[in-house]
Length: 342
Ligand code: GLY
Image (cartoon, rainbow, N blue to C red; front, side, top):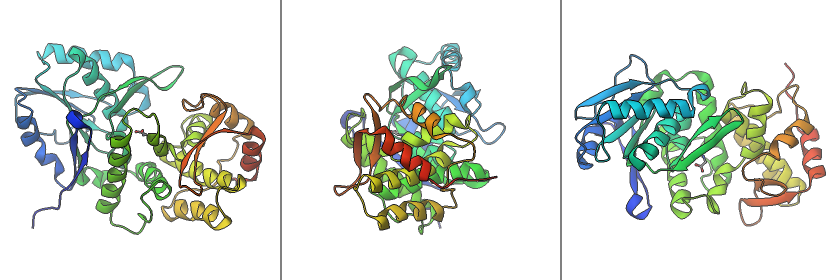
């Protein structure tokens, strides 16, 4: 029996595109490239010696490395020089195959090269499949911080092939499950009992709906940052020892407690935050050694914190961005959070 491949459409008028999800989704690549009328492709792959995706047209393969350290403007420059070297034009295509740092970096290179060339993402981590590769955010880091230079550049398609997840290490599963767990509070509840294909399908469908409504993050797209205000601060406070999804999971528990403290939700719903996160095998406590004051200082640097401390919080109307949460309330909730003692 052929594998089941599901399709989700990100509906953005002339920039609309499909996301194919399932084992073997990568095999749709040649047809998609043909549909773009591309004569050649550059395939940027972070999968080492593993099978290179076949675009079905003459291609140059460029090795990449997943990780925040190579997510730089220098890498974007090197990629673009590789595109020039192969004679890539705006009517050709770039293919990225790797985790979220690879899809972010290659996406930015595609956005900038010749002022924009089509790109197809083949995300290979759970985090990249359920979040990073869908929605068109591309960015690289500066020494001063993560994702500070980027643009919106929608891919022509995203192929979430479950076969890529076969060899995923445990920490990468936790990284992805943090993002899936937070979906419970922003419109896709009860994913924890579902098979993996359904979890990815539901997470991508939710993201597609939100991005279609607000491509450029002016309103509803903030919802995707549920648990992220504290999550980003925890990543930095732990020098990235805590992976993004793990940090978002703790941030989600915190967001529930803060919403409870502000009277937006009741105690049952507060507890639901911890139980949902725990159901994915994710930690619900603050890591040992991080100080509340340091976390607050880091949260003030959050890109969404244009004025005071801002959080996406659950409430009577569902989740929404809440600005100017008083610092003493945030500090009190942080102090009351359970701590992980090694
Ligand atoms: N990862 C959040 C967003 O795409 O908006």
